[in-house]
Length: 138
Image (tube, rainbow, N blue to C red; front, side, top):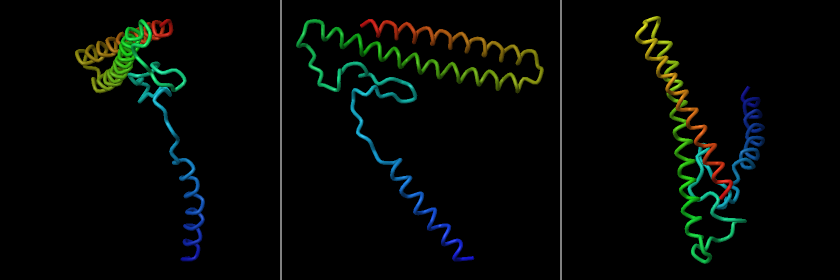
């Protein structure tokens, strides 16, 4: 029995270790790759072209483009965060609706929470679409 356990352990060890090291090998990441965390864009997204360096002020209008791109990235990040908040409130409204158990006052409050969350989600989606459209023009 001990030999079987040892054989199983060693076979799993020699299969798992190479698989984990192949998956866990770090890859180089550059600042211009369009980093995002939970779909929230980095503030510097779109500032570099072809991973080159950015020199601000060498051409006329560079500083203005820089400020606009950073502001659009911040607005896009805020709209993603607001979208996450809207999804949270949709889940909360569903939870309140389940816990209402037929009480008309609590059911009404849960429906109002769901309605407000869905309206907020629609507004966030429209804001993200507008910001994306403006950013693609710039």
